[in-house]
Image (cartoon, rainbow, N blue to C red; front, side, top):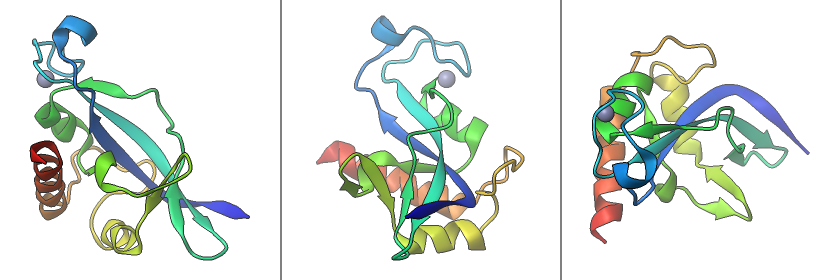
Length: 131
Ligand SMILES: [Zn+2]
């Protein structure tokens, strides 16, 4: 058994494709050499305390990484999360980060970002892309 929490996060991943495939950035409308997709997901918790993310509330927004961060605030690198079957596991420290920082609550105003968290995620993304 599992149940939804009050928390939601935006995940992000690279599509490995640019404007030739996806057209212009959905945020700024400019050409984009590498499209990222941001998806809002609700955080669920299992009886054993393990948190995980659902399949996404929206279909996702495509565009530049910096545009997505500007619009949505905190983005969690999808590649940095472990999977269990087809669900993305969400570690306890990340839950603590969400609860302790600004934002993360459903219905939060855009722009309430925890800057350190975004910076950390960017590092994770860069590391993932370089490897
Ligand atoms: Zn853009």
